[in-house]
Image 1 (cartoon, rainbow, N blue to C red):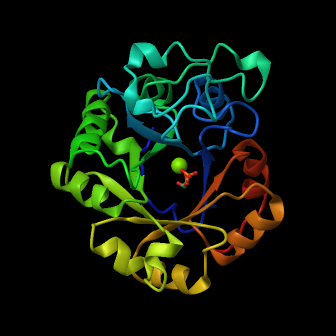
Image 2 (image 1 turned 90 degrees about the vertical axis):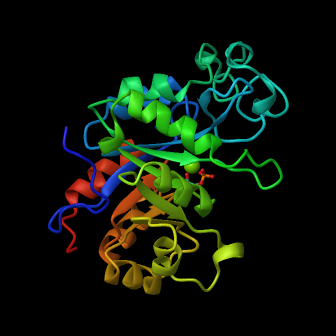
Image 3 (image 1 turned 135 degrees about the horizontal axis):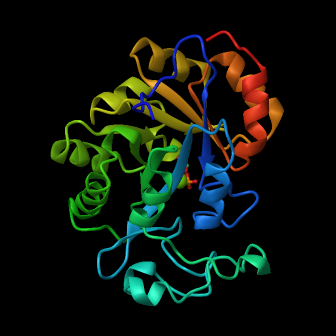
Length: 263
Ligand code: G3P
Ligand code: MG
């Protein structure tokens, strides 16, 4: 498989990125939802969220707490991996997924290796910060062990994590995720340049053409989330975004591949 480059070739369509796997058809961030993404041709990249368990294993989980997406309760960081693995991470979505468990990053990279690029979003909680460098180091350790550095984009709302990650691994490609409340008025180039990021990620509600212009003038890629319907996808393709992050990436593929938008 080719190495990941933040911007798709000039004459091709934007990347299709499966948000938490195919999270519209299987419970988010589980092996089931990542399997669907691997099984769908045309999906370029899989996005997933990482944080740490009590015993400092890198786990794939969006929320700080367990109750929304598992049968557990409270912060995931208070449990060892072995304890977390006892929780059912699929029934909340549909009873047939009751065997799903919170996966480790190692496990998920194992199934994506050589098949899909991976956008690893490092989660950081405002009131429960990890010791400096810990999540970055642990995440990098797994990626290096799997020899997948050239298949991975690291991203975060916490831009300091991206700076710290590139200090440890200067070859790491990183993305800054826009936070309207904190970053309002700041252009992508300003946010990305100060931490050495190559990708600017924002929601469809935050996106402006001015952002896109600024990003492209500074050779940055722009990925937009979460685009789940064809009207939004078509609009963003016409404007020339580089990546479309979707909960229904399987449904987005035919739309993206069918339109040969000028980039
Ligand atoms: O990378 C885009 C998106 O994943 C950021 O928001 O909350 O879905 O992780 P969230
Ligand atoms: Mg995410």
